[in-house]
Amino acid sequence: MLRLSHNVCIPDEEIQLSAIRAQGAGGQHVNKVSSAIHCRFDINASSLPEYYKTRLLNFSDHRITKEGVIIIKAQNSRSQEQNKEAALLRLQELILTAITPVKRRIASKPKKSAVKKRLDNKTKLSGKKQLRKKPAY
Image (cartoon, rainbow, N blue to C red):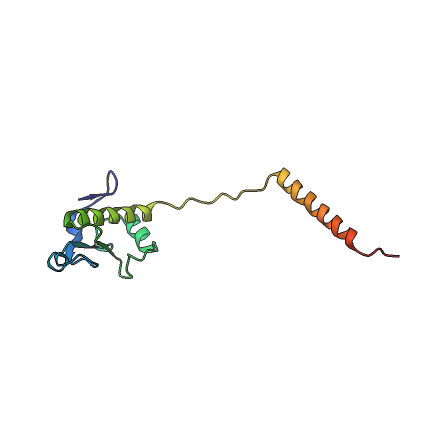
């Protein structure tokens, strides 16, 4: 069971874990052992609350397909058990980041001293350029 918060958790039956062969170098051992884990989680068929589902389906991430299935592949470790834990942890992190609300940006204003400094600098530069002109007779 994957716990997301105090009252929301995902049962193990909704998460499909399958062992596949890992990519990359590893000698003869890599051809015999399926140590990588392929984790699939269907958002629409899950028992998550509707708020979680809508936030996940609208979340922009390459691991979420158009059909609403989260696909995570873990193959960092040589141990199948460690890869399984890593895949479940990544699934948990993905769901938690999708449901956290985005902080609203508060528009800031420049300080009065900064505005005054900028305007003084502008008048100073324009005065310098006026001195470069030919005098009008």
